[in-house]
Image (cartoon, rainbow, N blue to C red; front, side, top):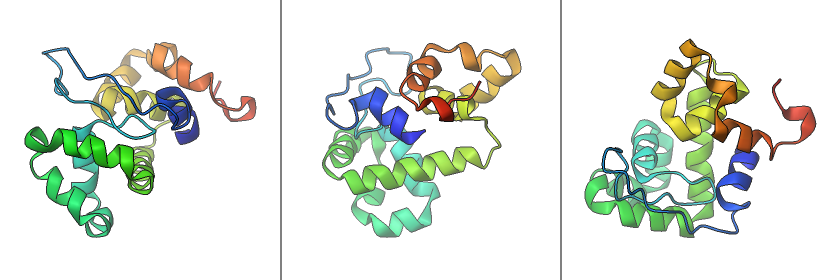
Length: 147
């Protein structure tokens, strides 16, 4: 799943020039995703604060996470320049979401819409029809796609 997300978000890590969020109603307004998986600084902050192993492995990122509003550019830069950290955070987030008993399509959906958005979409049955889910699934190997 992460391979397909990375293929969709950054052409497999080749294009880390993500767009800055311009929607003033978004919690990510003014922030730019970073790394091969297009992780938003707020998400990276939540992951590193929750995962104590990552906090100790990446203390500089953990320190930045304490003030996302002031440090979002630096978090994006770290995700772009430290692929090991970007992968570690992505794996931690995916594993956290897996612990919530999400299907593959729901895991993909949660990457773009957050866990709360996915749990809401699960109730309405809209997860598999989501454009982001379709785009990421188009990057997956045929045997690994959920029907």
